[in-house]
Image 1 (cartoon, helix red, strand yellow):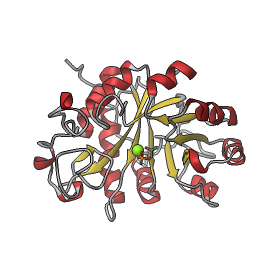
Image 2 (image 1 turned 90 degrees about the horizontal axis):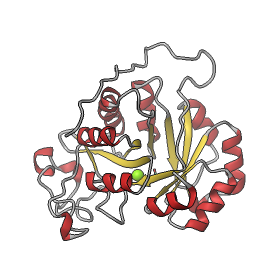
Image 3 (image 1 turned 90 degrees about the vertical axis):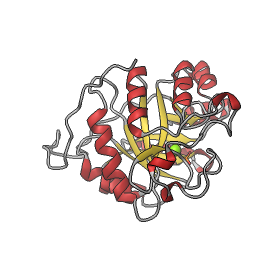
Length: 271
Ligand code: G3P
Ligand code: MG
């Protein structure tokens, strides 16, 4: 039985900023280990079952991908196409929620998870709050609805997430989505994710009021870590599934890794 959530008042851009100078966003405390899509080697990714496994594995935070159905319901799903992680066909963005909610997002992984649904954002936040699991919500955009996703998903999270739990991190590969998130909330921490960190990362950070940057660890250099950390930003890297690589990244000064093996990483590095 889930406890009813305490409602957090919606924070509008017009609200007073907590600081008059510099970045007005609350600084984020991110744990070292972020369970990527839950614990996707133990349960189907981006499902409630996967988030429960991440909690059992000792993770303090999970990362999940939020995307829109055709009729604008935010659900937790990674790919554009439905085939890899559900029994649906075609694009998530072409299907109404009424159809999405009947899809099986578990059988592809293991028959033991047959019937596991694609969760809604609301169901996910309720579970995470009940488990006291922090989160990084990645806005997984489809072309043309980048701003819309932020303006639909973020108010739900702002409204539902209990104030006593850790402030989450809102991220996206889409600068348009993050620019829109910036308008929706004047305080929640924002993060742009890059595959290769571009020349203009510092410009993005200033313009979009970022508190953190996400980067593909495969292209990351020690110099970039020093520059980004030196600029006062947090740095997370994805997707790190080798303990030795994680040790190197932490030694460079990376704040957090997204990993598919949260249990093993927590045992090695602490949560
Ligand atoms: O935010 C880290 C990671 O989730 C980004 O890549 O494709 O796994 O969503 P992806
Ligand atoms: Mg993601």
